[in-house]
Image 1 (cartoon, rainbow, N blue to C red):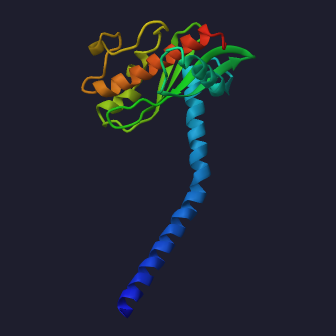
Image 2: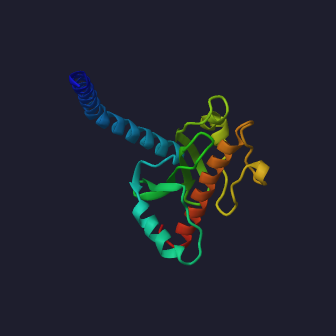
Image 3: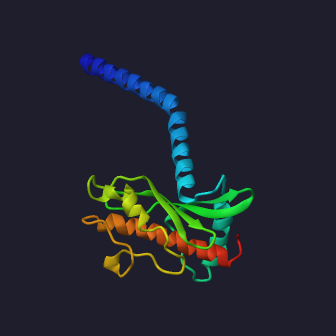
Length: 198
């Protein structure tokens, strides 16, 4: 019995030390990780809405509109997390939509830029867990440029689904996920513009 208590105490002590070490490391790295994430987002916003000198988070205004019109049978936009409007000298340049579609390997964090006249100006995949060499190619410039120039009012789909975007060979699910994010960004942009939010 005495040995069981001694081993239990030793195990408890090891767990306490490990938990303390993890908490210490978390305290040290938490701010740095948050700063890195903020920097990645800022770079993504700048790359998808060229010409914008500042971005304002307009998510609350857009979500209020979504809530107001959702009872009218209009579609929801579950993939869109945040909406940022880019300005240059106080004039709106475009809008960036932070989206999280589900790919083959899990969630994909992407940012879609749309100009004032409803044209995709850029797409950046910020984070993903897709298969290396296949789905991970959603980060390639070649794939992301396939969406640039697409306009609001036309559904965005991969060619296998009757759309205009060529999917990555061997990574149709990942390609579909990104296409659905772009589609929802354009549809939400249309709705917000039609309702006169900007």
